[in-house]
Every structure is written in structure tokens, then in C-alpha cells.
Image (tube, rainbow, N blue to C red; front, side):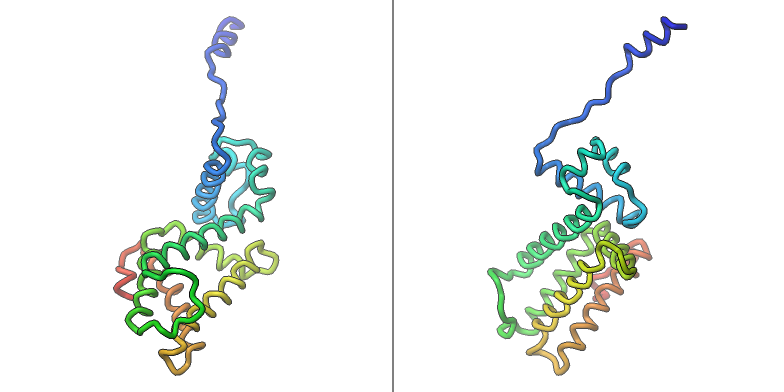
Length: 200
């Protein structure tokens, strides 16, 4: 019996952790965090589960972000930065823009359409934002301030885009934002069973 046990121990392969470049590792952690949170919510995921999925120890994972809360904010900021750049490129917007007054109605509509179309290509990310936006209504949620600031920024941007085109730009901006988020939620709930771009 002892011989069998020692033979089994000698053939067991030790768990190997792969060393990755720091930027690659950070990207891996953010991608895996997005997958977990979009399915389980922020409160439903643990650092231990995330570390195991990434092949790290808890301490090794926290080395990159410091805490679960900082990891969440880093994920949201990273995704917003990428989306902003992608939408600007797809809509043909170049350089920083202080005013949208020179944009025609057609150009403005194109920018909104590009936003909606991009969202259809990343359902996991949209699910993540939908879940976290709802969770962050609770006081004390680590993303509460992030989503409040993000909502204010989006409203300001939408207002600037439509101010020269409509009579009540503030109200229109709010309605556009509500329409966009509402369509996304229905689209997710229906398991993508309708054309969100066409509905927009």
C-alpha cells in the first residue's frame, strides 16, 4: 500500500504557473473578471475563484490591482476607454471635439447608430454593465460613484451632440440614454432574438 501511494505521488504532476508579461497578465485578469461578473454580479464573484481561473494565488492576483474594488473600477475604466476609441474611429471622428455644432443630423445619427452596433458585438460586456449598473444603485457599492459620474458624462455628451438639432436637448439626451439602455436590457433578456440596431 505504501509503495502504491509513493508511486502515485511520484507520477503526480506538480501544478505549473505560467509567467506572463505584466500587461498580458493584467489583460487576462480583466477579461476573466468581466466573464465572471457578467454572469454572477460583483457580489457573486470572489478573488479566490478569479485567481484560480487565471492560474494565480490570491496574493499574486492582488499584486496587479490591490483589491477587489480597484479591480472592478480598473475593468470599467478600461472598457470605457476602449469603447470610446472604437466608436470615434468607426464614426469617423478625429481628434478631440469641443463642439458638435458642425455635425449634421445624419452625422449625429450615424454616431448613435455606431454606438448601438458596437454594443451588439459584445454581449458579455453589455451584460456586465447592465448587472453592475443595477447593483450600483445600492449605497456602498464600489461602482456607485463610477456609474453616477459615467451617467453624468454620457448625458453631457448626448446633450452636446443634439443641442443644435432639437428644441429640448437635455430631455432628448435623457430619452436617448434611456432608449439605449432599455433596448440593451430587452436584447439581453431575449437572448439576442431581435435586431437591436434596426429597433434603434
